[in-house]
Length: 106
Image (cartoon, rainbow, N blue to C red; front, top):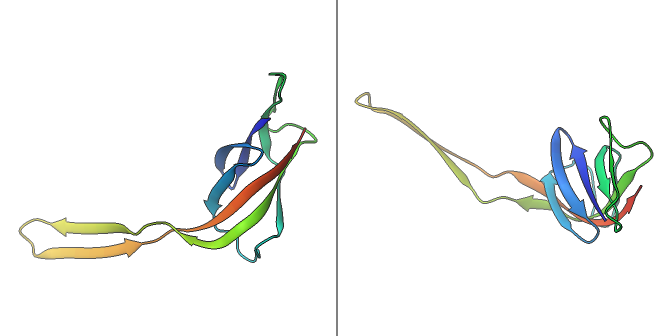
């Protein structure tokens, strides 16, 4: 069983047992359940597909928080203007929440 979910204007394709890294959700602890109600498409084991307009009514995806303090590798942002002596270097690490998909309810 697979589903396409939307979380804060980003779409993810998930199946039962998948591990998903999404943008960090504040205030969650490890082991807590997270419910995604914005399900855009569901495909079951018999290859029957339901599409929503925009969301499938009465469906949800339930996941459990594995880790809430993951950070992506550092991205270097470098700006410069030639012949002006202007250089700026900054770094950024995006924080993520790691979620394991437990069940999909159609």
